[in-house]
Image (cartoon, rainbow, N blue to C red; front, side, top):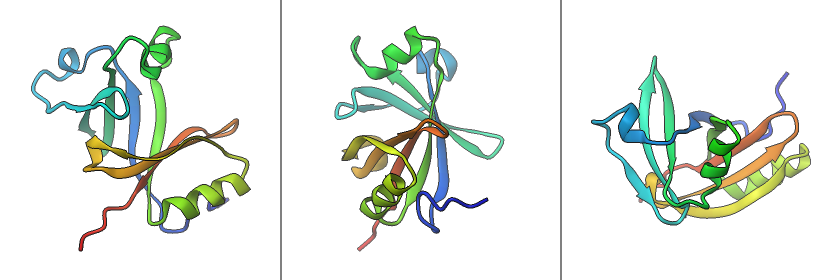
Length: 132
Protein backbone atom coordinates (compact mmCIF):
# COMPACT_ATOMS: atom_id res chain seq x y z
CA UNK A 1 0.00 0.00 0.00
CA UNK A 2 1.37 3.41 -0.97
CA UNK A 3 -0.12 6.28 1.02
CA UNK A 4 2.01 8.90 -0.76
CA UNK A 5 1.96 10.94 2.46
CA UNK A 6 5.13 12.86 1.74
CA UNK A 7 5.11 13.07 -2.07
CA UNK A 8 6.08 10.63 -4.78
CA UNK A 9 9.69 11.83 -4.85
CA UNK A 10 10.23 11.54 -1.07
CA UNK A 11 13.10 9.30 -0.04
CA UNK A 12 14.31 8.00 3.29
CA UNK A 13 17.11 10.24 4.54
CA UNK A 14 17.87 9.05 8.08
CA UNK A 15 16.60 7.59 11.35
CA UNK A 16 16.90 9.85 14.39
CA UNK A 17 17.76 8.40 17.80
CA UNK A 18 18.21 10.12 21.15
CA UNK A 19 21.47 9.59 23.02
CA UNK A 20 22.82 10.99 26.27
CA UNK A 21 26.31 11.55 24.86
CA UNK A 22 27.43 11.30 21.25
CA UNK A 23 31.10 11.32 22.28
CA UNK A 24 30.63 8.28 24.54
CA UNK A 25 29.19 6.29 21.63
CA UNK A 26 31.40 7.56 18.77
CA UNK A 27 34.29 9.61 20.17
CA UNK A 28 35.76 10.37 16.74
CA UNK A 29 32.65 11.51 14.87
CA UNK A 30 31.99 15.12 13.93
CA UNK A 31 29.36 16.73 16.15
CA UNK A 32 27.29 19.70 14.98
CA UNK A 33 25.67 22.06 17.47
CA UNK A 34 22.26 23.26 16.32
CA UNK A 35 21.26 26.21 18.50
CA UNK A 36 18.00 26.61 16.56
CA UNK A 37 16.84 23.10 17.48
CA UNK A 38 18.64 23.04 20.86
CA UNK A 39 20.55 19.83 20.13
CA UNK A 40 23.92 18.42 19.14
CA UNK A 41 23.85 15.94 16.27
CA UNK A 42 26.14 13.52 14.48
CA UNK A 43 25.48 11.28 11.52
CA UNK A 44 26.75 7.72 11.30
CA UNK A 45 26.24 4.99 8.73
CA UNK A 46 25.04 1.64 10.03
CA UNK A 47 25.03 -1.02 7.29
CA UNK A 48 24.31 1.60 4.64
CA UNK A 49 21.56 3.36 6.58
CA UNK A 50 22.13 6.87 7.89
CA UNK A 51 21.42 7.37 11.60
CA UNK A 52 21.26 10.76 13.29
CA UNK A 53 22.49 10.69 16.88
CA UNK A 54 20.71 13.47 18.75
CA UNK A 55 22.03 14.72 22.07
CA UNK A 56 20.27 17.36 24.17
CA UNK A 57 22.17 20.65 24.21
CA UNK A 58 20.25 21.97 27.21
CA UNK A 59 18.34 20.51 30.14
CA UNK A 60 14.87 21.41 28.88
CA UNK A 61 15.48 20.03 25.38
CA UNK A 62 12.66 17.84 24.04
CA UNK A 63 15.34 15.19 23.54
CA UNK A 64 16.00 15.24 27.31
CA UNK A 65 12.33 14.58 27.92
CA UNK A 66 12.41 11.62 25.53
CA UNK A 67 15.51 10.18 27.17
CA UNK A 68 13.96 10.57 30.64
CA UNK A 69 10.96 8.56 29.41
CA UNK A 70 13.24 5.87 27.96
CA UNK A 71 12.37 6.76 24.36
CA UNK A 72 15.37 6.36 22.05
CA UNK A 73 13.87 6.10 18.56
CA UNK A 74 12.72 9.64 17.84
CA UNK A 75 11.85 9.93 14.17
CA UNK A 76 12.27 8.84 10.61
CA UNK A 77 13.30 11.55 8.16
CA UNK A 78 12.23 11.86 4.55
CA UNK A 79 13.85 14.26 2.11
CA UNK A 80 11.16 16.01 0.06
CA UNK A 81 11.16 18.29 -2.98
CA UNK A 82 8.54 20.73 -1.70
CA UNK A 83 8.18 20.91 2.08
CA UNK A 84 5.01 23.04 1.96
CA UNK A 85 3.26 20.64 -0.45
CA UNK A 86 4.39 17.69 1.68
CA UNK A 87 2.93 19.29 4.81
CA UNK A 88 -0.37 19.84 3.00
CA UNK A 89 -0.37 16.20 1.85
CA UNK A 90 0.45 15.01 5.38
CA UNK A 91 -2.54 16.90 6.83
CA UNK A 92 -4.76 15.16 4.26
CA UNK A 93 -3.49 11.82 5.61
CA UNK A 94 -4.22 12.67 9.25
CA UNK A 95 -0.80 13.92 10.33
CA UNK A 96 -0.55 16.85 12.71
CA UNK A 97 2.12 19.49 12.27
CA UNK A 98 4.38 19.50 15.32
CA UNK A 99 6.92 22.04 14.04
CA UNK A 100 6.55 24.28 11.02
CA UNK A 101 9.48 24.63 8.60
CA UNK A 102 12.59 26.16 10.11
CA UNK A 103 16.27 26.13 9.16
CA UNK A 104 18.53 23.42 10.55
CA UNK A 105 22.24 23.92 11.10
CA UNK A 106 23.01 20.22 10.56
CA UNK A 107 21.59 20.43 7.03
CA UNK A 108 23.29 23.64 5.85
CA UNK A 109 20.22 25.66 6.84
CA UNK A 110 17.82 23.64 4.73
CA UNK A 111 14.37 23.73 6.27
CA UNK A 112 12.96 20.89 8.34
CA UNK A 113 9.47 20.30 9.70
CA UNK A 114 8.02 17.66 12.00
CA UNK A 115 4.67 15.90 11.65
CA UNK A 116 3.08 13.17 13.73
CA UNK A 117 0.35 10.60 13.40
CA UNK A 118 -0.95 7.92 15.76
CA UNK A 119 -0.07 5.27 13.16
CA UNK A 120 3.37 6.41 11.99
CA UNK A 121 4.66 8.42 14.95
CA UNK A 122 7.03 11.34 14.48
CA UNK A 123 8.33 12.07 10.99
CA UNK A 124 10.84 14.74 10.02
CA UNK A 125 10.61 16.31 6.57
CA UNK A 126 13.84 17.70 5.13
CA UNK A 127 13.74 20.08 2.22
CA UNK A 128 15.89 18.89 -0.66
CA UNK A 129 19.09 20.85 -1.31
CA UNK A 130 18.75 23.47 -4.02
CA UNK A 131 21.92 24.31 -5.91
CA UNK A 132 21.97 27.46 -7.97
